[in-house]
Amino acid sequence: MTTTSLRTATGREAARWVAARCREVPWLTSATVLTTVAGAALQVLPVLLLGRVVDGVVADEPSSVLGTVGALLVAAALLGAAATAASTYLVGRLGADLLARLREGAVRAVLAMPGARVEQAGRGDVLSRVGDDVAVVSQGIRSAVPTVFSAGVLVVIATAGMFGLDWRLGLAGAGALPAYVFALRWYLPRSAPLYRAQRAAQADRAQALISGLDGIGTVRAYRLEDAFRERVTRESWRVRDLGIEVFRLFGRFVGRENRAEFIGLVLIIVVGYALLEAGAASLGEVAAAPLLFHRLFNPLGSIMFTFDEAQKSGASLTRLVGVLGESTAARLAGEAAAVDGAHPVRIEGLTYRYPGAEEPVLRDVDLTIPAGGSLALVGATGAGKTTLAALVAGLGTPESGSVRIGPFDLADVDDAQARALVSILTQETHVFSGTLAADLRLAAPDASDADLRDALRVAGADGWVDALPGGLDAPVGEGGERLDGMKAAQIALARLALGRAPVVVLDESTAEAGSQGAAELERAVLAACRGRTALFVAHRLSQAMAADRVAVLDAGRVVEEGTHEDLVARGGRYAALWHAWREGSR
Image 1 (cartoon, rainbow, N blue to C red):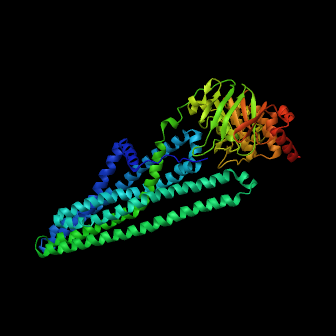
Image 2: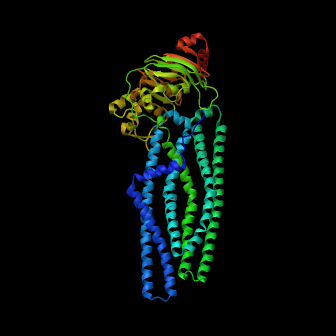
């Protein structure tokens, strides 16, 4: 299946998002700006006062005047420290507020996406955005963003201070700015794409790891360990090579920054000497100018050195804002009312092609499952069973044809309504961290304890649950009771029993259990599906035998359909599969 990554916003879109969020907290934003400007001005004032001290000494002014200037210098330093501390706190608070909104919005957007869009993008891309990208932006907000903002304000104030001493000294200091600008103009166009490529490579590496771990059984069965290891190694080397390239580029950028500092300092010293010789400036002014420019070294250096971190944060920010900007048509429309009673499933002329694929994976499929009936899909790997099950569950839109659940065409309902109509259960079960009762109530928030126990009884899990310390209130998942594959599948089946969707799709939901456990789970599956319309992707042909009807898929087409007994008697494709499976099960 070809993946199509989630949207990545432009830098301008990300900036607009940040500006809009800042406008939502005007008092905090205003206080942050004011304290930062005040702190920068008070940091520059002591240097200007020092020039005044030099002129006072040269002019042999009274000691009382110098004492007053000294007192002002100390007061400016103390007030500057206080304003800087307040600015640091407020910048951090504003950044934390923005990060919280961004993180919550991104997670909410991902959770609201149809499953088909998540699968299309690839879970590696999705997880890297709500995981790695959030971590990168968080680190940037804690370090790079406050540094760049505070240092930028200080640069502006200090430059204005040099012009205040003498406009010619100010121009001399500003002469270094083109060198800084050229350094940034050289660095930014090269670094931004490189950082984006690095983040994308990390997402590809995550996807390679996830796909290998998720399908570890298949990987081992087909002895594909070396191929998956090579893929993960290849993606890891790509991440490493991009990291080295980023570091090499940044090293060259630092050299250009040092060159700009040298140019500015030489210009100020030469111009200052010329002004002093011509009597056009005082010694204090000429002495203060290089000190002011030197005062710029730290903030300019901080800006340059933290631009590396800021670029990473910017690349991650555009990826997160891009998630927020995914088309609203691809989001959940909201809560949908539950649909009671079994509904028939009609699949008519269904053809489906994965994006970028040349050949369709399903071709002109026609199937019907009566209300309350069951159908098992069998066939070789790659026949299209899982794709058909996903389309019946509303995870994707067919190229042509339709899937109807009762009176509803799935192409015409939003994702929330589709989930109210169809529940899907796969072998990828997950036990959430929390109490067992909370985990079960994900399927039915209003369920009573008695309802939960009934569902556990249907799933065959009531025995071991009663033995847990705390029973329904026992913690499970991370930090709690670790459940093996069999127990996790039973919890998933109990959630299925609690749900009220009239149609259920089960895609190899018992595949990870052992033979004895699978037989027990298959009995629980039939109990959980009683009274509902069911579609099974049969991993074991014992599941097919228990279904009302069986459909055999081959290369995306239905080649046989009928009851288990009829198909065995017919002696065709299904009969061959059945006899081979029975021989292998002995």
